[in-house]
Image 1: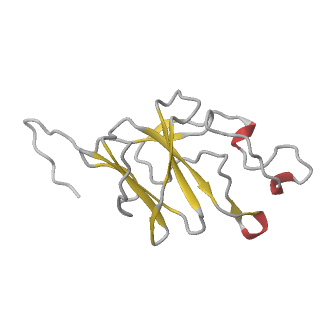
Image 2 (image 1 turned 120 degrees about the vertical axis):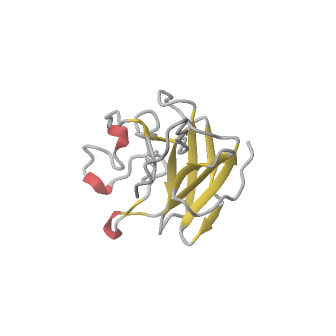
Length: 156
């Protein structure tokens, strides 16, 4: 699979007719991985792509040949310091906050929690179970619309 640097804007997964630019903001991430799934029903990712490019705290890549219908999420690495507000956990697949469509709703399971449910340390513990089978996932859309014989209403 070809991986190009991509651009920091626009945020989200954006198809341009030839491929998809993926971009996500994180101020404190140390590593971001783009997880591609074959479908919304997939329990596991089929590709995990490290985003090596980042511009002004925006991590990005461009995947030529990828298009609408691609289902994806992210794994974000960084500090696990709950007292400082940091709860990075790469075992958890995250929904793109800039997604233009949601391919799969959440399927409730304890593995979605970043902490071990019932642990004596409560939400200060870290749960390293993989959440890929249960996490909500984003989907790349086709932003182009064919007006056919009709014309655009030209509204802002």
